[in-house]
Length: 107
Picture 1 (cartoon, rainbow, N blue to C red):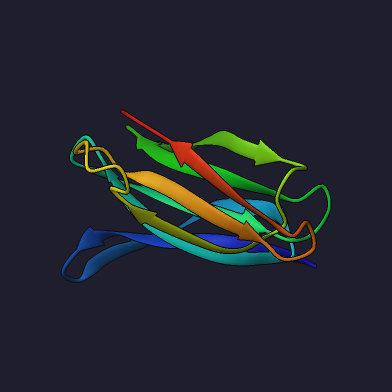
Picture 2 (tube, rainbow, N blue to C red; picture 1 turned 90 degrees about the horizontal axis):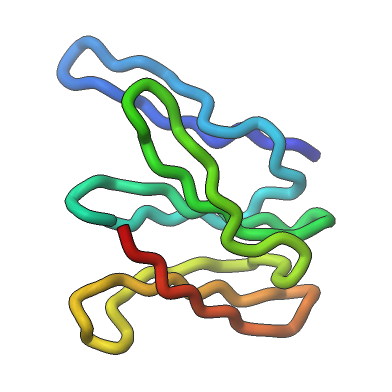
């Protein structure tokens, strides 16, 4: 099943519904991360080919960056500064793939 990832952008009474991605199969987890003072979205999915994507807002659209494709069937994603270097890391646990993956993502 394909699912849409949607955000609402704007403020007050003028919110706009924006489809970030409508191609993820069995999308299961979503989180946000602050990269260089800007919010980004992490989406993981369990449908083949499995994967985790990072979306950054660039001017007028959300750009997708592939963090993993085929290696982790993302059941959950979390963000934290795990090594205390002031930069966030992304962790994802794979249900069908039985693994844990960690990414160091910097602006």
